[in-house]
Length: 268
Image 1 (cartoon, rainbow, N blue to C red):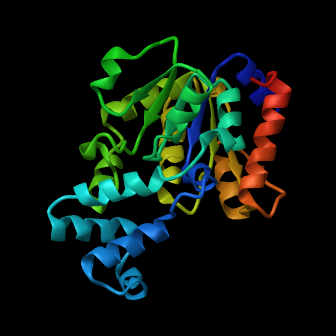
Image 2 (cartoon, helix red, strand yellow; image 1 turned 180 degrees about the vertical axis):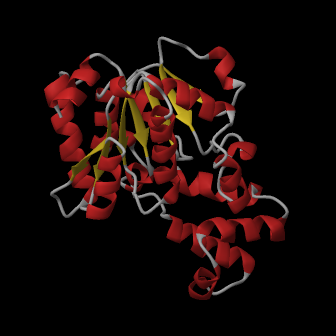
């Protein structure tokens, strides 16, 4: 952890924030999303789940409805309903880490709202248009899977997900450039999700093809549960894992972030 603390003090850590962080706010899971899709399409939720994962089911919804607009609107309402961000210790700790760039695969706006609540300037980056006027003195919040303010940016259906796997969109090019010189820390991710494993693999291969792999900054992943298989694979790719000792995933993440902030900075 010493190298990670040093990188935080030097403001050279890119933070990646996954769905686990938002779920600590009590937001609906993708299971809740599937139930809503079933209701909208007239299926029994238990039967509908048997027809595919949420990506293919969302793709089916789009084909049947002709657009994901109504689904996006429902998600926007449900994901931003009756939450007081000032009462989220995890979001406060994320702000306290003072990472200059935050990448997230979450659609919701709670990272932005947390920075606004604590009076920390930020620039939201969802598409190449946003990249033309980044405030370099503000925290960059880069939304890899889109934002509720832009339907076209949302990565939710199977086809949109496959398009993202090409890893050559403008945001991906920015990510590759940012990752070259900075430490990366991943929180709130489930390594059962092929999306994050693929991202880690692509970044690893970017360095493997370089003649400068020996000076590669370290990368870290916080796991809420032990996973010896994924831990071994990540270690082979030069990625260090921190594993929670808590039964409650949210409590484990909070304790981990509190330790990082304590070792690196005074509280805001």
